[in-house]
Length: 489
Image (cartoon, rainbow, N blue to C red; front, side):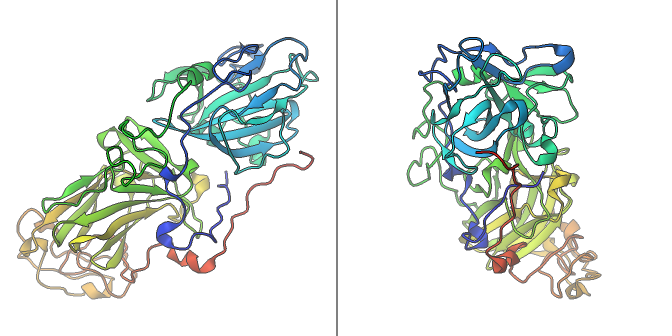
């Protein structure tokens, strides 16, 4: 599927494309999509719940809940509400027996993106994709679906990120660009599971891991009357910042001379871009979690992550990254290392994890230094290549002979590298000498990539321009969003 459009004209700098993840309000409190009381759907009830069957040989297991209060079309015109704060990501009008469909994305604490889908409705005329909606905001009314089946009702689903992005989809929807489920599992069968927050779900038994449909009543009941952004609850969330709530959002600490490990879940890492394309995976990665998105071959960056670096003491430090085997899939991950007033780019293969060496760099004392990784590696989004963001290891290096040999040879050519010296000793002695960086394309390589610093066999550039930065010159730039069929409201 093509990614949604990203308007870049308002993004005035490479380092500040769009709002960070924390800038978007989280969806803590959930309520029911029908009924006057958000905590109770009465007089409606879930007459056909998740995993229910209806002519299983024809349809399979039900992926949502059907809410009604009577038979025939008793509920025609009854209000339908957004179950939580969120953003409308999909509107499809007149979609066969679904009638109108609205899909809303919710950023749920400790879970990530969850999508609520509302079918068999007449959606409100004022709705638009990209629009923010609030808890229990009316989005439409129950429509007359009796031409297809009875009773009139709202078909309501709660989907995981993978289920929304990769289906299964209703007949023809995947070709139209609609992320709308078929309502049933297409007779593939389902398996029960529980996410990291304890929410039960069913997973469709297909070849795609993570196609989860949550049990709607249980998911909502677990979040009735929940409150977001409570300073002091131990979670940095919503609009909280180190300045407004230091106890929940500690500032990024300075790295001591002995080095440090900067995890993606810590205060020194920031995720930027389109939030719906970020996934936090639990149970894998360094310290049991990692973050990933999918690569693109677009000229402009969509999502990117930054590890912010502040040093107590200037010196040479080795950088290594953690890439969980089986999760890191990008073979063209370009890490932009900004250090001591310059930026070098190191391209690595994330499939070679778990520990991948970026090289040795000279850092100045103080801040304003970082490691950045963009998603536009050149690997197409259609290939669904995961690019992983996890721990960054910063390790001090003795600036003496342990950094390598004494001769540079051809290291400045960026082709064959230097022969290096033979006097390197100590824990990093194996990085001395070497063959340079055969893939380098610049005429001058930084220390650690040509002769005298050891070859790494990766691409380096020293022009100070981060990968992907040239798109700034092309603003305004707009990737056109898929269109829906005509004839809708």
